Length: 249
Image 1: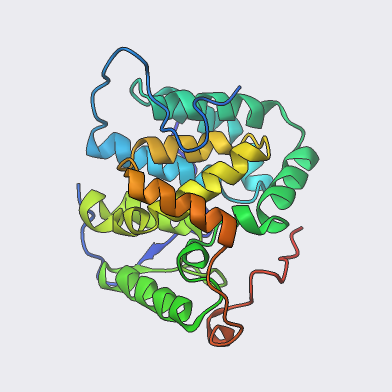
Image 2: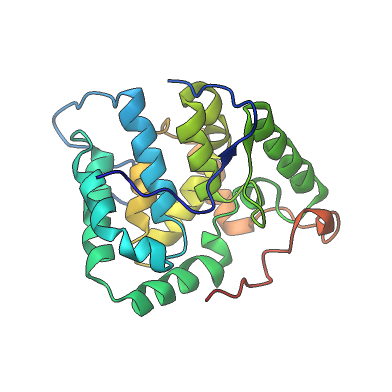
């Protein structure tokens, strides 16, 4: 069965360039299989994993609810890895929950909690003019790769970033994920602290990214306490501020 595509996915421009090749662990610790090394994912399996993360981090609308069995089957076909283990545990919850409960959990987790927002440039730049420039740079990166960002969504939305990483390959596509590695760890920590099942999806993503250095872990801790930089100007042309909640069906 073919994996259902994300309705708001990045779409190839014309002409498109070819694409390149209970919680596991505690916050701040990568999920790993103790005592045994597992092979790295192939480029194809890595793209599938990123695609699944992109899908599972979107709002659970009727289309995504209808694809739950398909998504679980795709997770099950991944090679054995810490990432597959995390996603397997997540989809067990995702398949069993009632649609209204899933919608409520998503809104409460990602729309009502600033610490677990899925907009990556916020963690690096806060509400500053630098964030506006970062959004433009990211959108330009998509266009250079021959991809068009979805209408009505900021380019730093994590499902969009993961979709781009899956399509463009590790070298080009995953650059934004590596650049925002500390922000991803902040989201992951906040989800663990809140007891959210979505922490397992971030565990799966972070398990396939470079580990944080000790200096980076210290920076994450400092940022968690102090928060991102604040400057209440410079973002109007790039979309609504994050404190304006999205109204979902």
